[in-house]
Image (cartoon, rainbow, N blue to C red; front, top):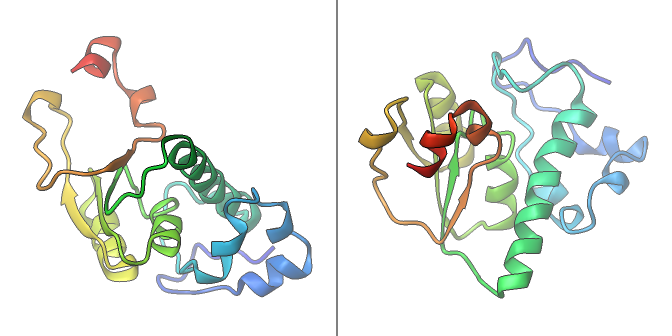
Length: 159
């Protein structure tokens, strides 16, 4: 696989992944959106560990879970928040699947939020570690939290 991490706006083609069968291994619910995913990668994306296949499949897996939940609830979100978005591993899939939705992304690192804002045309905000002080700038129909909760105490989960 091509190593994407060193260049700030280096894009790779999903065609290479398609040629080795990687896109066909994505969850079925994510496959229709693969050609619409912005493949740009932040130079210091903390979730990228050197494998394009793994990075893409993690975002696609998140979208699959979201699509299953939406199918079960028959909901159609117009405002979505990727809480703990990092440099956009899931945000890019949300933008591809919901191109007309208002999408927000938040995290602790300003440079990640700047990347998401510029690459995925999402509204961003910097979160914080004081749970009681968090205030979202909008309301959302769908909130994707991913692994953020695993970094919190049980009490902070409840808060």
